[in-house]
Image 1: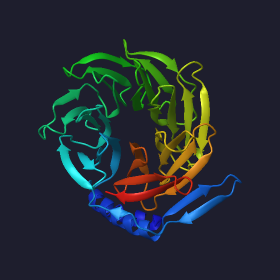
Image 2: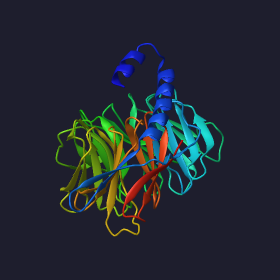
Image 3: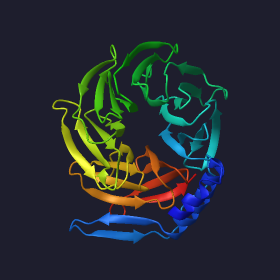
Image 4: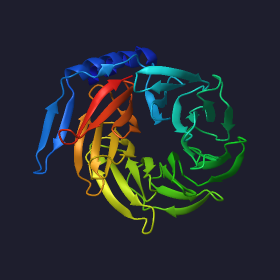
Length: 366
């Protein structure tokens, strides 16, 4: 496969090459679909899932960079085709397409309890969209000098924080579209932003291997967590605002971990989750379910989604999405569903199943 990759890349346009890989990915997913059960006795049990998931018409024609949940039925995805797509992940239908960016969409942030969302792009802009409005953006926010790599909406939906590889953070008034605060820290190449629920604080990861906690009141650094050994690619805050997770880049199992941090008192590292073999691109806290154990999920460039015991760091289940390439983004759909974006097979709908012990299954791709 690597030889084929090297032979094709120089001769085919990028879009044709990605379409070819997408077809090959579908074939591979039907040939082999592996899951791994981690038993209490330490034995790893591999299962090969033979039932093919539902393949809907792809929502995108190229790599999907990000997926986010708008409400209980709809998700928003974006990627290299420069298009944001509103998709009903329960029925498998495209609801609306949004075009306005000139380059790849890098981040999406949805406004809670509304039909509105923001998209960020390599074209240095942020656009605000309304699902019920026209196909034109409601606002265009321009203020960064490089690709926008972080978006976070405040809990009351009145403010938006954006971050970029230009080392800066900007705070915007959502109502007026005006920038109200800006700051910059040397070498702070932002990779992700996440607002702490019910608090004025924003968690930020960076290519300088640090996680920063910002106070939106004046946009000042409130705390810097201990520096990691690798680039921090993503962060997520728990619903209660007590903890956050960050993800690390890496290769061959070096780095490639997720880390749980305390946001309340000690602000120390609580636990680490190691088991991926390439960069961990995304992480989420799983909603409380019938299982009593608090859990988190991670997705990585090794094409695997893992579920972890949040308290002990034990890996409980691994789903290998063969043929999908690097997995770029995770989002919680509902109490039993996850959405996972990928390089070659669009967005995957995954189902958490507790009927036979913990299992994670792919049920659809679009």
